[in-house]
Image (cartoon, rainbow, N blue to C red):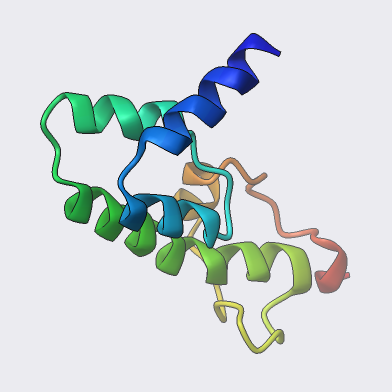
Length: 98
């Protein structure tokens, strides 16, 4: 519970642009990590750009794993290194491939 309160407090203290990016993000981002990066001198615009870039790169991979390569938002194929990077099993036997 304490960690959750810290997350909410950090989120509330973020600049409005970062709050909007985190609120609309497709994935769960750690607000305390973002707040710590701001505290170390990172620019809010740079953090927002990195989050959006990571989501742009990750979403087709997630769609590939969950729905298969025929899904309109999925990558046609994904290299094993990217599956490992996003903590997916590197295997060829996903449900849609059987």
